[in-house]
Length: 384
Image (cartoon, rainbow, N blue to C red; front, side, top):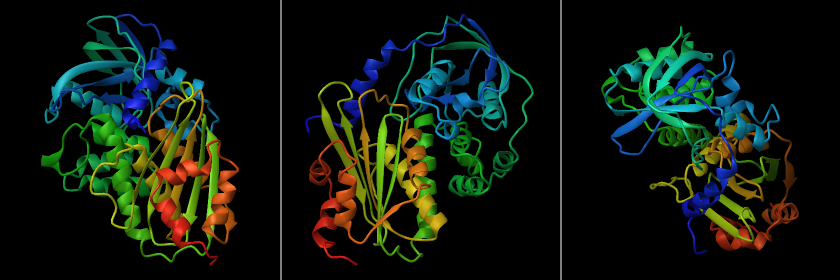
């Protein structure tokens, strides 16, 4: 293959410099969607701060990825949303939860609506940031002074904030069951507002995203593993944001393989990356990054809704024009795929034959890269 996924995506993001972010001065008045960002560089001292836009009113759409696909926002819409966000930066230790800036960021992360904000920067914020794990954002700069208006807290997030005996993983699942958006749970975790009191700390944004996806997936699997297995092969599909997804549910106990292809995104290249697990899950962090866990969550969420157990082979293709927007891209596309009406098949081979007609790469490229997909073709050649 010659290149790892992380290195490849960095090359793609290097090509995003054609985009231009919002122009602002040293003072920014407006609203935070609400949105915060906790960096990872320098850990355990990290740069934290709000993300705000010089617009007042309801700006929640800028930081609510769950709404983008249902509202038919395209890739350009999303990038424009995100590059309108200005990131403030101030360095603090991850355990310094009494810091005034931390307190304001906690208020923002627990808010139900956009928060009126005013920031003074030491210098004019500059630049743009794209990353495969988190969503892009616009100019950033060191923040000198930051104030916010009155904030109304989300009741469920407020409950977990004050319950200092509730483990973070239990808080995630409680909030999820109450209908709190995944993006809200991730932000609240990143600002140290949940978990056992003495263990609370700031969590870098990209780590908090995967932590919530992974934890919720584990909790859902704890239920799904007791359900009856589906009785046939099912193919779910969805296309958006320069991606195509095919999810094959198999009449087996839980197993999961993620296979993704990047096709002519930058030129003539064709790369396929993959990772997999059996019923025990993975003991190490996935080699394909956070998208592995966001997809796993989406699949297990659907199985819990169906009250069924199954294996899952997930194939993704990213095409020319694709830009890394963060793992929400995978999570929300997979969730939408699994809300569609599936096509049903009597054998794995027939399901694969159908999917092969929808792919731009030959199906053999995925088979060569995969592990579980090979096993299924080898051992499941007869009809059920």
